[in-house]
Image (cartoon, rainbow, N blue to C red; front, side, top):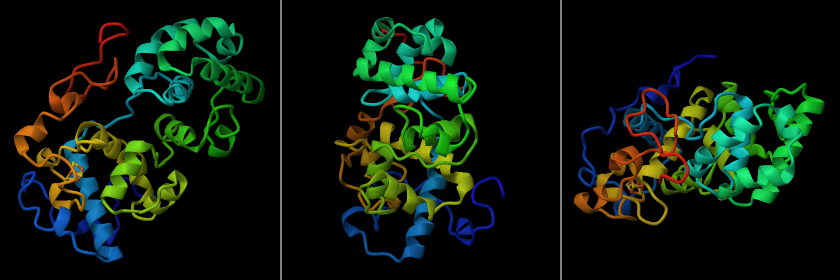
Length: 289
Ligand code: SF4
């Protein structure tokens, strides 16, 4: 298996990137003027977008704080129906109280519920976390398994959670289809599928495996910072010349810049302990935001 960005694939050597074209300019083929394209043209464009995103977010990473596979698994389960920021603000106290699966398996549910209350759905999440900790203790020797088939047998762990853990704690390539990823790849016409598993399968045919994990992070970064659900900041988006949905959001560059979030908008990120290369500010602890 080659490493790096799709080595050995012809379309990776295609035309230069869209850098320098400027948001809102040079976008003759984007937005309303978008013309139908062949599958090959779409694949080339998709890979160019991936390269653009790699330049834009060289520091893309999972936005959950974790120090080992168990912490990532727990944080990912907690992240359902809430923000990564809220999870990151909650997990320091949780992991101080229950550092291992054995500790969490023996937790008093009411005590754990209080600790994870800020993440919402805290009763159901407590049940899942204790259940998965019992399973890790009893069936996997207290270790998080590194195989999809095993991970999805754990209570509260679906394919999405399993892929997050595999990609980020075990280095197994995976495409993580969350709400941001689904929205953006449909805007970019990489797929028309709505079902996350079908989206995952179609995107997997466009990119080499070695790109899957980082592609997922980059797309989610873009969705959280620039290409928002309701008000995408099209006028401040470097992907605009490659985007069929250009114009769905604010195209005025100045107004669009005000919509940018996290480090792009000069504000704190979601992680309390971001990687060293993160250019933004760390998130504040619970109660300080
Ligand atoms: S913000 Fe989103 S919709 Fe707008 S140009 Fe960028 S990628 Fe396309």
